[in-house]
Length: 597
Image (cartoon, rainbow, N blue to C red; front, side, top):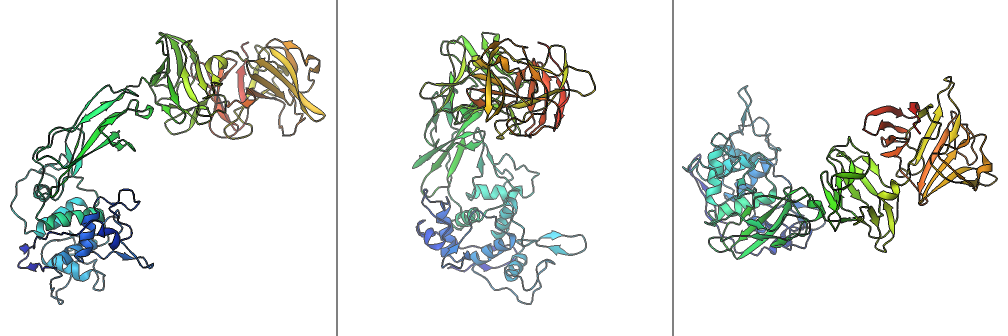
């Protein structure tokens, strides 16, 4: 290694070194650094890190297993930065008698010698504490602006202009001169923004791999930069399934390689690394940009990002399992006559033209998104991730949510079997299980598994003189659900819908096998336990199933009211059809709902 000699406080002459080693050597130096893109230890700065090791600037950490690690993505601390610069300068002699001017750097600190050198050259002055003392803060991560200042002072504080080249570094930004010098020298290109703008992120921490890159480029006297760096453009229709094409433009000089990366809301989309991209359902309503990275041997790599295009919220006629429809997104039948929209307020609406023909009654959940699970369950998720509504359970392979040409919104399996349909869900109008005009207490969803709370409790408030009579919630055929010698009444409403009535006394078993109308007397509230369980007040435990599967009582309409779950057993609330909350059930039934049917 050539020695760097201190000739004055700021006048340090660095021997500019050109390293001719291979990036592949990085793997041999450190176990956690690889130039192989397929490796989990891949680092874009593998060559620079290998140079750092070859120069003896960094030795990394001994893992105790015969290998050394560099920890490339870990922020570099200020004392380690001092050590890097000191070793890069050739480990010059320092007056051992000179006191370290920082009160927080003890004489036996690991890098006391290096920090003393840094102070003696004026590269770092630390922080004035107001009591005459100064601190270096050796274990703090170094920020990018401070790193620029260290290198600038190491270079002798050359005279440069004031334009930094970065939109987040103005003339009033601390170390703006130093950052501008670093940029013009070709040591840093910063971070790309849409429209070809660049940021430096002055207060972000410097990672160890980035520090290796900064020193490597500085050692070469900086790197030449592309003189022509056009902003990429995107052409094509910004809609799900349509092709978008990126044009890199004409660079000068011509790059040897151009790489593409498409981004959604500023985050890289996995696998989207060619000049063409077809937006997915996940892109609906999101700004899409493309990042172009140009490389040429011996040049500072340059990155430019296009202006954003917002992908349409119109998604075609279907979505697949695992996909979500954000607020405002819509499906459209193939013939264009019907639409299905996740409204911004949270309601799900199927419409013919402007006329709604089905809705979920889930307004009041602004920003909620609808997701289709791998088993065919639709879930309306609030912005905090909680469940606002779910469809009836269904099990099928590779389900799709499809808006048909007849206006029916369905979940279908690849076999063609319909797992759920909006027309079925709306084909049965359920009333409350007590007589018209009566006011009863109502509880919130509960039952078995957390994702299948299909039971609601109803009962008259004690001492009010209210009727105790339980009635059928819709027309259907009465059946008997047997539990050995005991059992309880259920009603088959057709179309896959079934309701069950538990805890009753005076069960009207003579109705079994007969069709009854809505409002038919079935028995009285009680506390009987024919199939086990428990009861602490006289009530009916009402259950609803669809095609043999429990229906989650969350966003479910019954008796003109909507039952909501708060995510805990027996906790939730009831609203009217317009979303006005009528009662809250915090752990049990509360008063009161009035039967309107």
